[in-house]
Image (cartoon, one colour):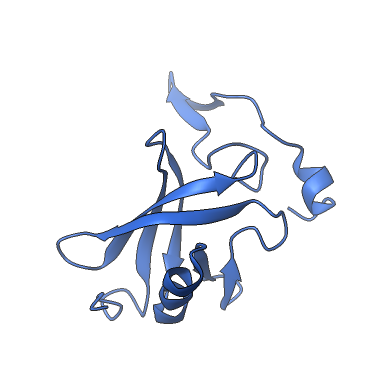
Length: 126
């Protein structure tokens, strides 16, 4: 599908956006296999740089990301994936979005309430 996986050591940046609200939910990385699986299954799949393996978003929590559209940037080294989030939150810390901290007066502050208890979902393994 002509994405430039070579530019960043076999990965493209994947910006995940809520289709309905436009809110950015998370940023992840996809290798060719993760991108292919995302397209084939209709659910966002990523490549974990720390674990060196593929992971289907929601495989532990059940909070999957149903893909609604995929766009690429002009360099074809990043994708914007618009999704329907199936679950109360995307962030493994219990928030709707991974972007729940706002810089205010020179310090990071939580700017919203949790939407679920990560200890209950992940059994203390988040």
